[in-house]
Length: 487
Image (tube, rainbow, N blue to C red; front, top):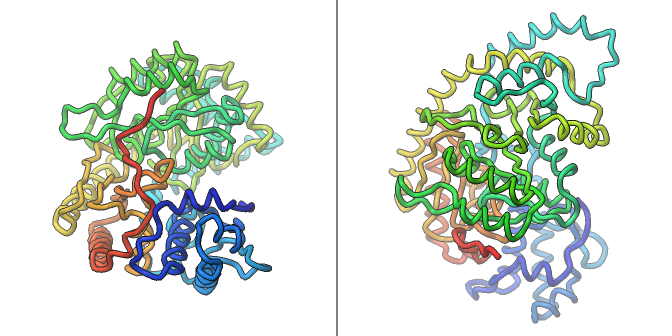
């Protein structure tokens, strides 16, 4: 992404940056570096000129010049002409939230919550897919809707879960993110509001913003007991009735990042309210299969035919498949296909044939994977309690991650320090809007115990360093995650 950042926007991002613990130029450079590393200032963006930023901040130009010089020396700002350097990432530094960049050897990547492939099952599915390929070779190979065998398999899976579905209600996509982009382009126009849980999946927020839409966050309650509601359905309903968002993006099944699951009563209320308000519910079911505690819920689409469901094999089987889908009523699928053909003309055939095999025997690799994830979850929870007892941890009922509340608003600072201790993290604010969740960190339990022990030990060491150097705590002023204004 290229562009420029005006002085006012940068000052807003900086927040209360000048603590007086260090020279002003150092503090300014450090906070800009944190913002770049956390993704809140995108890469290849021109920073304001030294003169303009100095005037807006009420500083001497010498201070800003020194800060920019420090950023260039560290590799976070290009040398560019004059003072309009562009943000970048140094080769020696591990970006904390820049997707797609390689992680150096010796650094454990906790920014992604994904599992390796279910090897034997995956290999067999592709081997069998190759035997079916010759029958499709006489065709052109373009299929914007998806290979019939896969659409039928997905429809049968929904039907078996109590939601009668035909192949005509399925559109195959290149993963869940591709599916969400198709849905956004079809249902939401520029400047339209999209209601989201707060926190929520960072890539969904990125997609919403990239579509020119405005995220409309509704906070998840802070769970204090097993009887507390996992979602604030009343606030969601009030938001839909008063703000009239075009759509709502929700993760009711082992929510990312908290691991919560929405009850059937809450699903029913939300589906009815959405239908009456005209808000289209778009439900991400990517993690639904990762049910660690055997919680029984019905798919959201069983409560309303207007629900749009997004699914994928990325979390349950392997992200490298790049196979996802959209389930909706046939008229809506027709609209999605029209949008999709502007973006691409279909997915790879062999992968879809293999995916059809995997969907038809969906639970085959899952039993062993779920048992492994249960052990990993218990290991991580035990390690966090032992080594970081001041962290408050919410026990997830499924999914792949633990959502931790930190004792101070230091998530970004921890994330920036983590590579020095062999970790790559995604800071809490990546999961929210407006700089929220500096008090939080998502930690996946997708790794075996030995690696989890290393990870928690590294987190403790980073926390210790932060405790020993108070000036490093300075990050954006955290928003209170439990408070969201509803008009």
